[in-house]
Length: 117
Image 1 (cartoon, helix red, strand yellow):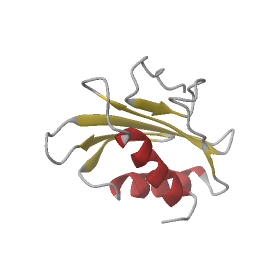
Image 2 (cartoon, one colour):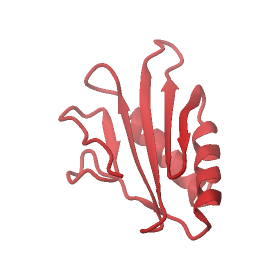
Image 3 (tube, one colour):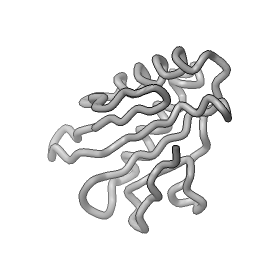
């Protein structure tokens, strides 16, 4: 399963992007796919105002809502058991800029998946 490409605007990050502005590294895992998915779900739900709206084997989709203006960002995560990595995309639904919110979110999620914070 591939993730949608990021738009030209700077309010998106993805492990599948080719340009530095949007690109982030996938996070490796070595546990069983079901266990990795459980960890991915927990890492996403640790983010404030985030709800998982789709949870199927190998795929999660979540919505994160900003505190003040209630903007919604879409977060997708593929638990790629073939490659042994979490691949993801986080993008704002509206607007052009996000003040780095999507990248910061996915850096925190990545750290949790790696066993960091």
